[in-house]
Length: 223
Image 1 (cartoon, rainbow, N blue to C red):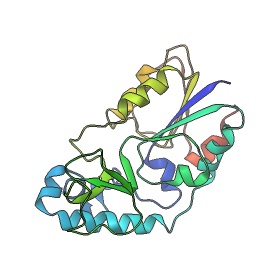
Image 2 (image 1 turned 135 degrees about the vertical axis):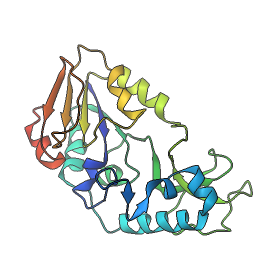
Image 3 (image 1 turned 120 degrees about the vertical axis):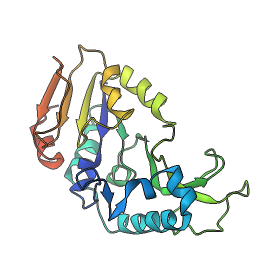
Image 4 (image 1 turned 90 degrees about the vertical axis):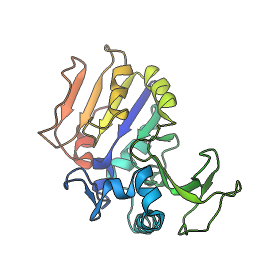
C-alpha cells in the first residue's frame, strides 16, 4: 500500500468557518497574535490568554469538518495516509482520519506550564488556579511563537518514507513546517492546493499546483 503524507494548514479549516490570522495584519480574532500566542504574552497576562483559547475551544464546537477533510478520510481506503497539520482544531479527527500529527498543538488538550509531558484531554474552560498533577498552572496545549515544535522530528520521519505528498491550504511560509517538503525524495510527486496566487512556491520539478480552495481542489486530484 502506497503512503501519502498530507500537510494541511489554515486554508483547510477556513472553509469550515475557522478564522485565520495571517490574512488580517497579524490580528487573530482582533488580538495581536503575540499577545495570545507567545510565552511573553502568557507571562504578561495569562488570564487574557486563557480566555482567548477558551473562546476558540467553544467556537470549535460550532463548526464541522468540510468536504476536504472527508476526502482525506476516504483516501485511507486505498492508501496509508498520514496527516501532518499546522491547525490546532480537531476537524481531521472528527472527519474520521486515523493518523494525525499536530505540529502546533491541539485546542482540545491542555498541559502543565512547567512540563510539556503533562498533557490532558480537555474540552471545558481552563481557569487561573487550575493545576496539573505537578502542581503548576494548566495552559493551552498550543505551540506558541518562539517555542520548540516537539512533533517535528516525527513529521520529518513520515515524509521521508512517503510515496507522494499533498499540501493543502498552507502558504509554505511558516517554519519549520514549510521545510517538510524538503524531506520528500525529489523523484516523488507533490501536489499543492491553495488559491492564493501571491504565494511564492518553490520551483520543483515534482510539484503540481492547483490554484483552488481545499474543497474544490481535491476534486482535481486523481489518486
